[in-house]
Amino acid sequence: MGEFTALPDLASRAFGSGVVHANDEFFAAADHLVLPAAPGHAPKTFDHKGQVYDGWETRRRRSAGHDWAVIRLGAPGVIHGVDVDTAFFTGNFPPYASVEAVALPGYPGPDELAGADWVEILPRSPLKGDSANLYAVADRRRFTHVRLNIFPDGGVARLRVHGEVVPDPDLLPKIFNVAAAEYGATVTECSNMFYGHPGRMLMPGLAQNMGDGWETSRRRDDANDWSIVKLAAPARLHFADLDTSHFKGNAPGWAALTGFTADGEEVELLPRTALRPDTPHRFPLAKAGDVTHVRLDIFPDGGMARLRLHGRADRDALWARMEQCREQ
Image 1 (cartoon, rainbow, N blue to C red):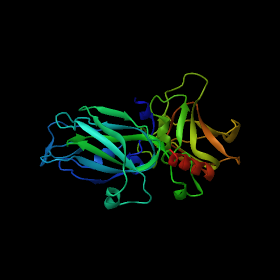
Image 2: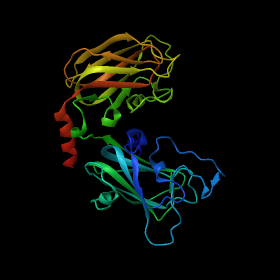
Image 3: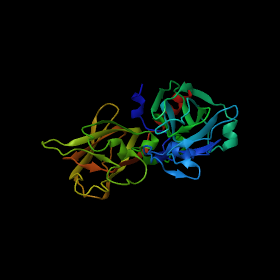
Image 4: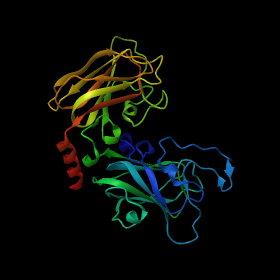
């Protein structure tokens, strides 16, 4: 049931997601729903509206109907599952929730969204309080917005919308970071992620601290650590950013990059090269044809804050993915 949680959270504020509109935010703002950090709680912390909650909380309903919030997905894509997280909401969580989704071009406002043809991707389903409520989604079309409905009222800490990122090719430049999670790149394999998942290297923006990156345990053998990235699309690469920011006593000593073609052929993109601690590095890459995956080798171990691979993507592949979503 929860296998989809390994996929990116398309509704995360880390991707630029936001709450477009909510019908009620009396006790706590709906903006909390998309925060990337896990919800927290400080008991007996009161303001002028009562206990402070790290989540969205509506007032007690005294009329028919239900409450709802509309979220713009920062990374539009195919939704595989949702997590309606009611962490710390115990006597005030909604007993039921449903989720709808829609795909709209541009930047629609509340009126356009209200008049859109929404698709129910999660029917009205029971919720448990102070719990992650995981539900798989079968619809494999691409969506840009979701609407969380709670019945009849109450509090939800976070809404996680896990799925595959499918960017609009019309909005991508000719050369872009094809290792960006926000465009659909993912980590498929890695040797070690003791201190931090390698997927963090692909996130937008600068790393905030040493915990916001990939870090391995200390090696006590003669091997080295590595991770493999599936690019957003097959691409001809030009430059690589290897950012060791915040990693000072634990940065890798060296790194190398190897590309893999669709036929499985290996291409050396960057030979073993020395790195400096706490430093954003940029390296030109060897000229090669399109590659679909890239292996980052670090020697012998350590931490990498960000990996960016700038190149010219195969536009036909990007459009083929979009068309596949429309045909579902």
